[in-house]
Image: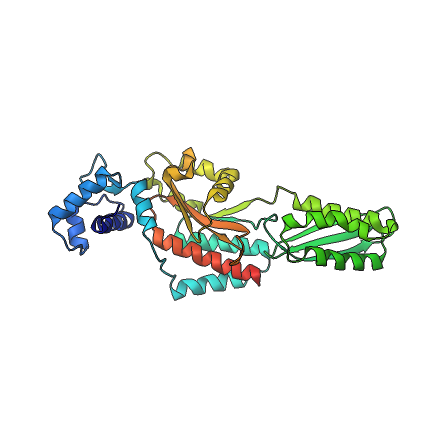
Length: 339
């Protein structure tokens, strides 16, 4: 749609409909917005927008409502995302700065995002496969038991126990710890399986069983699939939006219960700073009347994020405000994990 004036009309319709839940007529547009044209011109523009599928007329109203195509055109023309207010930024900082560990950070983040957007908030745990190792620690627990601690750059900590038949030599443990951190620190987990497989040959035969056991435990941990999980908050917000669904919210709630659905949607979303999927773009029957606004977090300017967070709600959503909140929370969470 190249006509700037019609885009202004569409923008006004979206803003009014999101604010009021009422179909928008030409008279309302004239009264509320300074569009600089006559009511007749606005009616002609609305007719053109309807003809091209950007707005539609409900059966019970003379006004118009945006379609998925209309929302998409509205979102695509948002060139700059308005920053959050100083009070909102302080709320993010105060809540997240007091977190004590990764689990606490994720729980606080998802509650905060639900409060800021009044939608269902979803936070994916940092992916072990997309993280880089910050440090590996080996802690002897007994003469034949060794604790392996894996610390990632996303703040994730995994612990595994290795048992050996022979007594563990503290000197070998110290050397193995040093070599592991040289090989692994700062690398993505997917890039260290090769070096790990070569590590046993760097030790005398009498100590290779221990090295192989530790390397094998690390490799098995990195191959785990169970770490892909999400946390949600604000489902009650969806219930309060029941009027926005022409059917029921049942299919949406069912989709939310299937974590694999949201994980797949997150994996399919673009790598933009803030990605938006509207209605049928979600490619899931239960979400054809819902929108998802998401962003990656935990990465830097040279790499993709380690996971995603976002919100899900009806297509009648405050897209600018929601996009601003998602972007701000993702950025702050990234800074916390980096620190």
